[in-house]
Amino acid sequence: LNTILKQHKAEIRAVNEEQHLSLSKGVDLFNKYAASITAVVAALTGVVLKLNSFRKMLHEREDAKANLKSLTGLDEDSISWLEQQAVELSTTMDKSGLRIRQSASKILEAYMLVGSNKPELLSDKEALNAVTIEAMRLSSASKMDLKQSVNAVTTALNQYGASADQAAKYVNVLAAGSKVGASAVDAQTSAILKAGTIAATSNIPLEQLVGTIEMLGEKGIKNEQLYYQEN
Image (cartoon, helix red, strand yellow):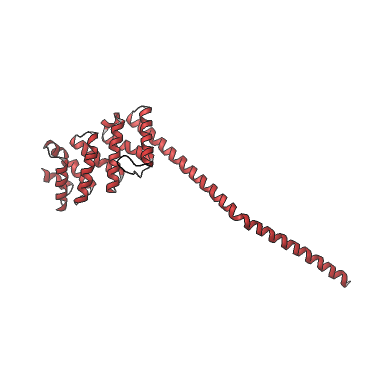
């Protein structure tokens, strides 16, 4: 009987050892491939997220493109040209060395802002693009919101009755004036809106007007008060 019991215990022990060995091999196999499986899942998740982001970006660009076409009335070729300019500007530096940190859809929206503020540009895609680039250059230089920069550039151009080819000069004046004076560009814009027409009809150049704005700004006279000082 003892012999039979010992044999039975030995068989049970052998079965347990075999099960333990199989379980250990299974754990080792899982550990071996778990990291790889996790990496694959993470990679696939990243691809899906990127695809969703890309799809969202394309939808936003298509919406902005459709809105721009509706606003400007430009033909399909002109809209496609502006879209291509927006894509290039969003990924590369322009010829002046400016790197625009805006998406293509945001640049298309900027075209709309410029066109809304200066409607005569809506029939000239090159001029619209040129003024928009200058507004983005001002935004980059002054750390202003793009909409504020568009307002600043178009306000100065409109008040002086200046054409699109003067945009770069006006941006230089606005940016330089703000760097050396007390008034920020948005404060200059508000003052130019109130005093710009009078200054223009009085043959006072923008450089002199901005200098006056800065001088008065240093004395605490800004925006609404400037109109009365200019008069």
